[in-house]
Image (cartoon, protein in one colour):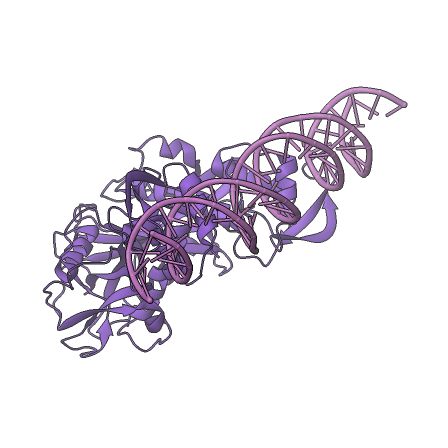
Length: 227
Length: 227
DNA sequence: GAGTCTAATCGTCATCTTGACGAGAAGTCA
DNA sequence: TGACTTCTCGTCAAGATGACGATTAGACTC
């Protein structure tokens, strides 16, 4: 087979919830093209590497999170002929949901990396290099949709969390306030969404809250109602 | 940039509902590898072609459906290093939903093409070439999910259809019988799901049924309940 | 150590949606 | 005319939702 010259890359939309807001990990590009501009982390797929392996490798390089317990899913593939000025590069975008990292972003090969509020980036279509604004937009929309019908919000939480911490995730991702009482009822009455740990915490202030961990459910039916 | 040798292809999961069953368009491969085996239609992306354009071109070649009103959406990308024995080929899979075609499959460059019941193919993981069983499986699952929360079932219908024809689509795709009365209530009470044409037909037998056409809704909330 | 503050948790209630199913309506066919 | 088929409208109980009142259990202040 003779193949056209073509590059294959993976780009990552790494999301977390910090300080009550949905944030995305961006890097500042150290080399041309778009040198000095913000972009999603990513890189070329190695010759004998599967797509998800490539995404997981990039994730580890940027965040130090090498665990296979991190939720990572393919979002879409972008292959417009001139999306990259270096030549034809097709990029497979992955979405990663990570808990609020205690440590800052680990040593990476990017010039610099930092968490930025997703809303802020989405509001400014010219902020990111390449077609990364579009990729981010699709990734965030995927995350929003996933919270509706899957118990994935807990991917943003530490292993043990309270109901209101979980609610904070929903509010940050959806950008909508939710009624604490109805949310509590919904979460605790949906079978296997969360399971009680048996301990309480006062880290959120106020009356001590029960701690829960992720349950075994994989889909939520009926789904959570987006505000 | 120096790029590794790499092929970029699009593969199509083209679904329709015929004779009360969900069917998929398959071709019999005329050349190696997997010569003589069934496979999803697809082909290499041209040097200056966007991914969706490539998928639409393949769709037109296989079905004669060149309209941009045909629903086509990207499902996922498959890039395991050795999924194609010819070398590294990354394939972007698209899902197309088409109405029951009055004409048989138009002249195509495939050795032969035909509609096959999706359930039958899904039951036999060795039937298809490459990793196409997996791609088909993902495509069908996407279609099933889409019917729940989008009004896309009408993409399988002619421009004007009856409620029970629409119900037939749901039953075929989900493989579940639905209560005609509750289905009728749900569809007609969901705003902008369908709009009445003002005429009736007796083509389904029994009492004449009102004809409807697709409404302007893009999402269904609450979603349709899968049996 | 009593009052204040905060957030968690439990309850109530009207409204909406669902699933199950009865029953009549409006055509075709013999 | 009667049998048959399918469409369409209704009813009813059960469950889910949204709005919101009330109580509880800690921490914090004075």
